[in-house]
Length: 114
Image (cartoon, rainbow, N blue to C red; front, side):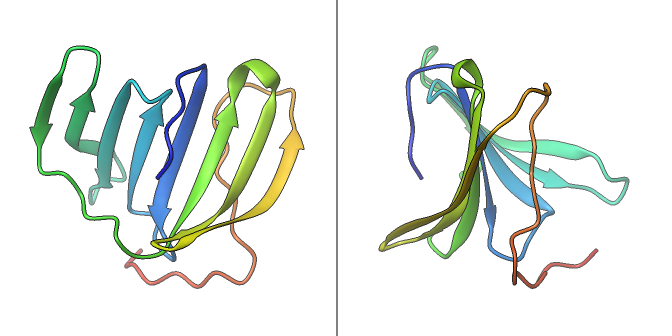
């Protein structure tokens, strides 16, 4: 996973999964969420690099995953796939609406239970 120190947010998900993910806020605070039976995203791990605190169990993201990178100040949105050996950018566009966007990846098959 990559980190930046500006007004960005990055969501990473295991490839084929949507029920667990990380949210990195400009490299300052990273959280890992799992979606429960009620459809709520529950924080299971957090690393706050400003306060130098960490709690919960850090997830193991050593297999393929997809990322969604929101460059807030530039109004640009980038998404792609990452493996332990590197990554591939799949798309980039400018957008005017607020809020974070996660898109289906073309050809991706869900492997988690819905």
